[in-house]
View (cartoon, rainbow, N blue to C red):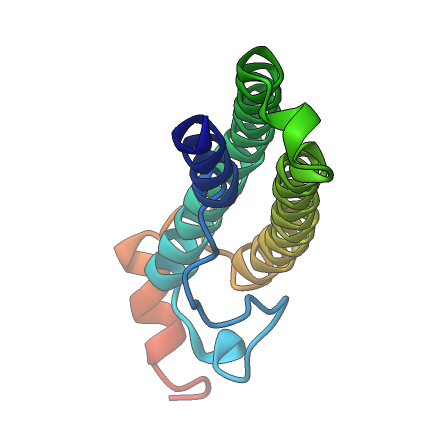
Length: 155
């Protein structure tokens, strides 16, 4: 009976992994204006990866919270069938609190991931503006036009 409760509690507490310590994503950085076209394109691709990772975290948090709730239900059911709930008042409360903690952690993970997605989308828009402003999509000038621009006017 104690094993069932301990297993349920352990599953509920470990169901949602903590965020790895990553530097906070910002919309813009001081070095953005000095980036070249290739660096802007690479950074935009990185933002796509950040968004995909955050979407995965949201899905994982949902699944982990559901798993913790199920583990809590199984633990309480096992305790009830063994008679431990009747003999030890408040034992079911601990299993329910563990499930609630897992749900709260899941909601925190989802909120952080949603914030990351919003920041990454805003950064992608900024990068698109930089890319366009630097005429990265413009076709290269023909060699004759480049030579005319290089020659001084009036000679």
